[in-house]
Length: 358
Image (cartoon, rainbow, N blue to C red):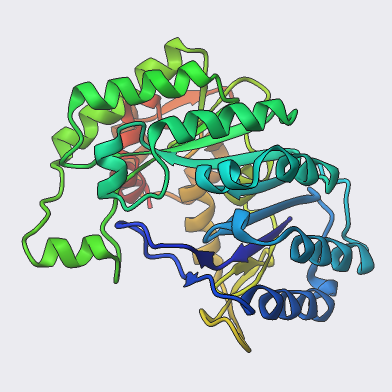
């Protein structure tokens, strides 16, 4: 599993706290030089266990095709080239509209077989509030272009949990998403992070966070509508048509080793974590080991985020005495075969359930 962080944007979203830089001429080639050098330096860490490749960001669809090709050729040089079981590239609608069908066809020729598009909303007022560069019609047009290019595995991202998101607008947003018929939908609750514009607005009294009740109601609407539409709710924030669950992301929840390349990218070796510093030129790499206790807790937390749940014997051996029985009596935990899992109607409070267990 390989993740490559592309830290470029044309503008910053209101809510975003991920490391990114405003793209300027000359940055792309310098970035690509650094990533290619890192690939060669860290080639012994790479494992073809799942053989997935994921370009995230930032905005990977800003990366010129020539630089993308150079990175792929370097991966091939060290024995980690395609074809990949799953090769995902994150895109923004406005880049798809600007670059058009030839760009998408080039992505396919390079081996990209899964597109993840950041839509976030189909309401233009909210899109402007988020400082997104596309509008609702642009997202629909971009999706149609992706289909025209022949992509048959497409994911779209949505956001809920906004205090300025009404119930009617949220239901229409989900209906619009379902009408496009993507194979996968990721839906994340808005969080106020770090140095984001939204964090400053909250501090200045210009924004008020949505209550837990509002967020729960929006989440319940999402779950119900996507269930009726035939999507499998396989992880707290992720829904897929059967057979289209994200292979790469599922590897994270199963704690499979992966290598993260590029500024601010994180890696996992199986026994320890590492990360690159958040700077474009000369970024450094830092490592830390995980204790046995850390590994147990992380295994439980990640597994219980999924519909598969966690191995029953493992949970029984590593949880607080009596916690399983109490949660099962409350309907917050169920046992299916040899695994315990959190039922969908308790996914929204999964963090609290996990805290009670570990």
